[in-house]
Length: 334
Ligand code: UDP
Image (cartoon, rainbow, N blue to C red; front, side):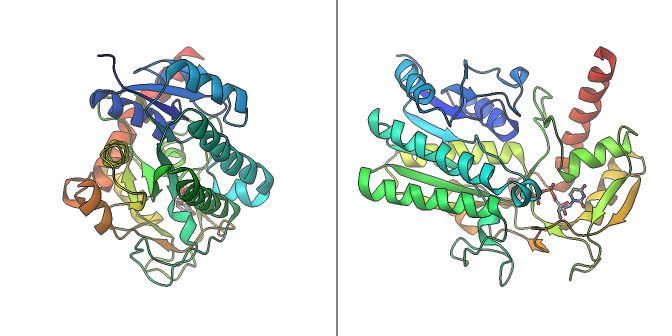
């Protein structure tokens, strides 16, 4: 029997490529559907790459027709809080219409399982942490708003067409494949860990600490950093739960532990034995002070045990191993 195929939009991207590796390890054939606007061709290693855009309904339709996937994992999106504040139309179009085009294709091609890449940004500034799935959804930036709208669209598609979905609300994806095959690289970087590692290698100006007046112990913002391979495994488990007949569900993906920007910097300095050059800077618009997951539902529904998940040290070790090698190779090839 041929391998069951899963269409992975954004399969050349950071989380999407790690999900493809996890899908292949679980016996599926991941078909990466990506326009390579921010993804990397080298990250597609476990199945075919279909060059296409989720905003192009005919390209989406053709991919379904050619590969006949049993399910969709939808990562292709714009996902930067700061950019979303400056370019809201881009976020609404890509994140909402992209999802709509995929839902339409699922309907036409009888695909009834959909794993959706959502975000903790749907919660906005939570009244308390840790954040459970039932917490109020009041996004404070267009990124979170567009993802929440896409979740609502999926809910309507479930009612009307019987499409079952998992909305996986990630906290901060970080780290790299411990085998060193893939890792984080975007054409334009805004994320704390890769920027910090570049600053530490002297490849960028000092790292700006964006906000030192937050109501937290050291004044810097707190996030729940979750290893990208733990996220990838969670996607496969969510897929299998839906394939086994589960109704739709929303699920936080985080470790339940928060770390401030200063704690991330200190841990990186300890692991690398180098100093991170940094400067204090104003807050970034749209950034909440503290986001930490209540991981209970993921533990019960996806068997994602916080005690088995990789913590900040392992995240930074794998990120550093990948980053140092990848940067050295690029500098050599330049
Ligand atoms: N951050 C920072 N300096 C940077 C980039 C990010 O201090 O150059 C902070 C940011 O304000 C947030 C945390 O690091 O509190 C994580 O930001 P990132 O952009 O990595 O992820 P986000 O939380 O926006 O998804």
